[in-house]
Length: 142
Image 1 (tube, helix red, strand yellow):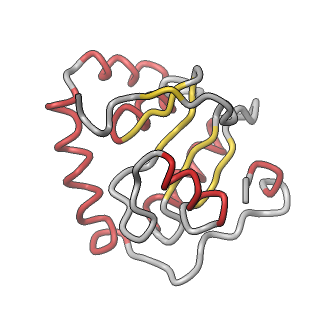
Image 2: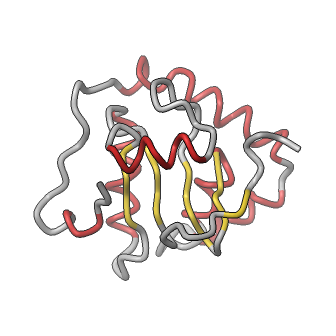
């Protein structure tokens, strides 16, 4: 079993997305999710926050060099392409993309890893985590 296989996430809030808060691409992902989720089912915790570091450690993600994001959905923690496709499957306008979860992770995750490995070079990195707007602050978990 892969260390990034979905696993039980008992006691963790449903819809929590753990993300790299200094990654420009990851911050854009959060904005994309917020825009596609008018029901506000998803909340967000940057790995660099106290809560995010604790969750990252719990799930085996190195908070200093995260290799994956995570989402808590249906009582499980999902990682890498599973996490992205799980979220996309719940957003308005992107639900059909969830069908790609039918493809083996051995095919999907290398694509995820390629983007993740080069995300700072391709999209940039900030020195501080994204600051949510006043309207989105309630969806941030610290």
